[in-house]
Length: 110
Length: 113
Image (cartoon, rainbow over all chains, first blue to last red; front, side, top):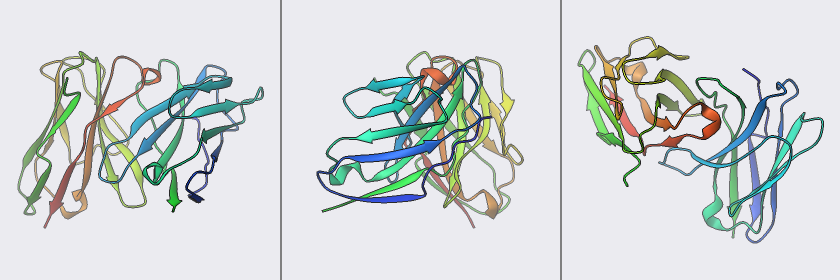
């Protein structure tokens, strides 16, 4: 399984844009980059997935450069309710399961 | 549409007791998973199933058994609970392979004393 590396924790003030970078030097050409969000006392929630370039939905944007060695999850104008752990995963097409690391704990400060 | 429902939400067991955790999904998903989450450890895969009647071992299967007799249900059993199995257990399901995205339940907090 391709390993991803992301910061252990980040702090941000309310209203700021937050960018969480994930390194994945050895992902395969058919791997997807997927991000999950986990609030305290809840299961993780799928938020966004991409293969290359940029993907945007109502929650976040995902930027993947051409070399695909890293990716960046962008959360626009965070609020206190965005305080959560964010997991970056490399998902192999056709794989049977996912490997979750320890994620990035984002704390939004008033 | 309930999604993924886990039963029970909380349980305290004595060492050596047995119990079964139930996971039910109403989305007609083929794949189902059991993870455990310990402080500072992230989520670790215990067992998973890629369809009714199938099961496979994950990263940390020892001390657990599973069954998938019906497509909508995935049971996790602890035959003889140990304090090391104190954890939060999450069930997840997926339409197909993981690139379709997982839907997680709200978790079962198990304490073994």
